[in-house]
Image (cartoon, rainbow, N blue to C red; front, side, top):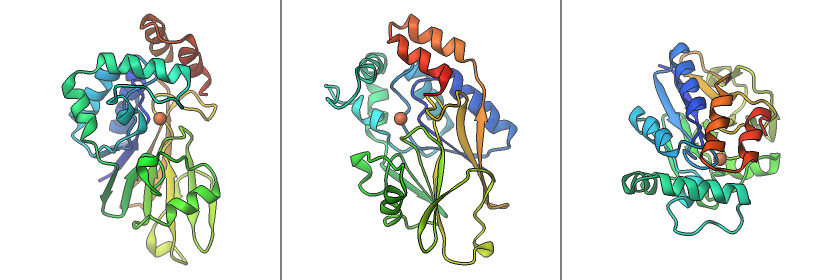
Length: 245
Ligand SMILES: [Fe+2]
């Protein structure tokens, strides 16, 4: 048994397919999705169908929620609004109903999934700083929690205090822990990474080895970018894919 935790797909079919192929290579048996299936890129319906067909737990992202509203949020950037409108036009009523039914959180054994902070998941607060992680930890009942939203992979560890740790094969074995510890993992983004690495990001969790690992997967970024332009979406949404920003 091995988990593959992924999210912030944002309608990038090429990146999603590459990640799912990598999960197969990594012998992932249990995919889990932290939301934001739609928005930004050119294939919202296709990505939603692919994720739905996995039959795996999926939690709601802010784009998944806002695409079901009639109006775009004032706070979104111009690019994000255009892409959200495009997604809304592409999705069928059945797709929108699927998104409306997504839960904000999912708990399974030792882990919790949520798109943003556990401090009011419906408020979509970012977890980027130690203080923001500390606030989310307050509501975390399981040892492990997997989030997204910032599109930047990160790990926070809570011992007596909260601190960030390097994301490289993180050992989460309870018996190897000296004091009570909790981990908060940001799994990065499949479809629009923003940490300066253009490759799709996701995370594997092996409950037997008790190792959480960050994976980066190359994909046909030229193809995804060309589709954005063909769809009439802003050029900047295509350009940022090459830079991972
Ligand atoms: Fe997102």
